[in-house]
Image 1 (tube, rainbow, N blue to C red):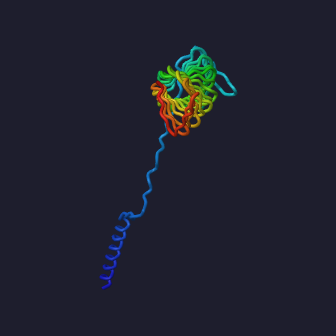
Image 2 (image 1 turned 90 degrees about the horizontal axis):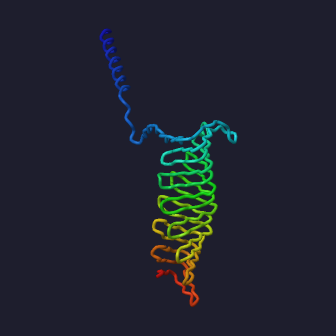
Image 3 (image 1 turned 180 degrees about the vertical axis):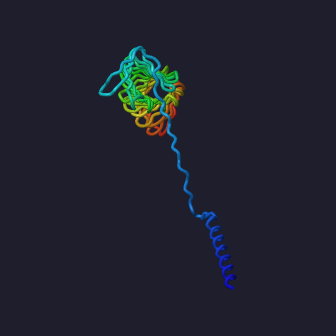
Length: 272
C-alpha cells in the first residue's frame, strides 16, 4: 500500500513539472491595445562637400585676424559642386573652418556657366554655399545685368539679394531700387523701397514692385505713379507688359492729362 501511494506521488509530481514547464515555454500573446516599441531611427547625415583648390601660383601658411590660414596667391581657382571661385589671392581658413574662404582682387564667381558675379572682395561659406561680394559688384545672367555695391548670393537657392541700392538693365528696360532680390531660376526680380522703372514709353515709380525678366511684365502693389508722354496714371495695384504695352490697373486707378482726369475702379490701357 505504501508503495502504491509513493508511485502515485511520483507520477503527480512529474506531471506538475511538465505542465509548469510548458506554461513557461509558451510565448506571451500581445494584448490588442499593447503598443510595440518602434525600431530605433537612424539619422542620415548629409556629407559635407569641401571646397577644393584647383589652381594657385603659390601657397604660404600664416595667421590672419588670429586664425590660421593657407594663403593662395596668383590665379587662384576653387571649386565646389557647380560653383567656381576665381581671384588674385584667397585665404583658406584651417581646421574646422576649412570650408571658409576670403578672396581678394578680380573676384569672380561662376555657377553652372549661366550666372557670373564679379567684385573686388568676397567671403564664401562652403557649408551653406553662400557668398558675400562687395566692391563694384556686377552680376550677369543671359537676361539681365545687375550692378550694386554689395551682393549676397546663395548657390543652393540661386538667389541674389542686395540692400545698398541696385540697378538692373535688360534689353528693354532699366530698373533700380534701394533693396531687392533676384531668383535666377524663376527669373523674378523683387524690388522694395524707392523703385524706379524706365521703359521706352513710361517712367514708373513705386515702393514695391516685381519684374519678370522672361515675360517682361511689371507687377506692382501699393501706390504707383506712371508718367508717360500722353499723361500720367496712378494706381495701387496692377501689371504692365513692357512688350505688348498693355496695362491692367486696379484699386483707385485714374489717368490725368492736361484736358481731363479719368477715374475708374479697374481699367485696361493699351498704348498704340
